[in-house]
Length: 72
Image (cartoon, rainbow, N blue to C red; front, side, top):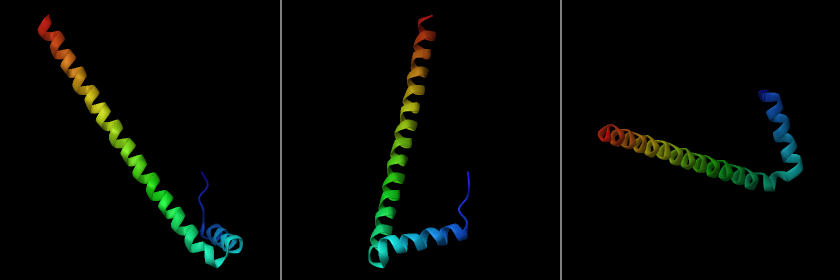
């Protein structure tokens, strides 16, 4: 995966300034930041749910194993 260097970053920022103008650039930055924050929050929630499901599955598996051993 290619990395973005300082030259490329300056080029992208200059292009954004030309395309959107200095008035809209702060609003665009806020929107991007809000989107990234929401994505991180959502992905953290999904990871927490997946971990909780895995823990519940292991607990159920252990209970089934105990029941099977007790029944033998």
